Length: 354
Image: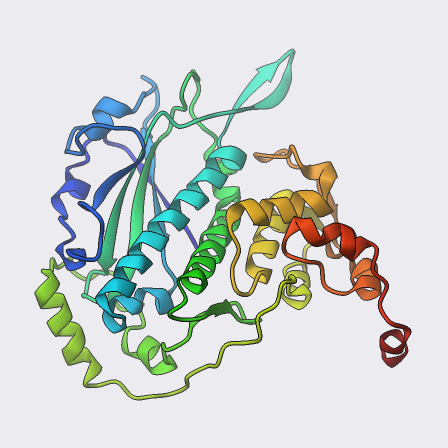
């Protein structure tokens, strides 16, 4: 889950001071990088690039986007070239998640003729910092993405409630993108299980037990050089015990309808953001954000323009499209194959066996 932390100060010294030396040689450039913007990234970068409201106590937000544990562990297991690719894929996946949030979650609440409305917003700048460890030196690939509370050309601050409502969908997009990119690189297979766990082939359950990531809360932050962290991880691996190495499933060009449908156990209605999250998670081997949203907009065209908190809601049965799936089989991931899918009828022998 993407975490959101309010920023009450324009001082970026805390982020700039962490030089993230543990990623030297596998990260392109310094830890600080622009997703939108330009210029030096120093302690005053937020003061120069953010607009603020005189009455606002919150000047911006720190959105913490973390890789799945199995992906982070590649920083300790993979070769140097693979690690460079993983960090690059992580950054591109962060960009995809932020693009979704800006397009669908960044709104400003206002009134027109007594009616509450949501106006679209755009961040004037987006700066991010990439790190590779948690506070106790476990592999933990993550970005701190800093965005202002006052959108470009708006006089009111953004709706935090709307931003928070879309974090699950943005996180699902991030994870689907990084699975897709790992698979595209071709060294390993990455997939998501029915239970919601992101798996990378070659990462054993014993590696996750060795670096569980849940012991860092409250610990004092440590800084590591690249050499020191590699030495620590090598020492840690002496305690590694194999538990289970999962084998990748058969590749498929269709959505996993079981994972998709399981997303709607409990809710009585579904918004577009829920469909985005379900579609991203149900693309077991991953998918680019553009294809995820194309899938949703192709199958649910009435919701194409929805954003913010005012998204319309549909029933669970309409969301699952179970009758169509039973008749035609799982829906294809890529929109170009939808027409063929819509013309398809399942063989009667399959129907009789149900």
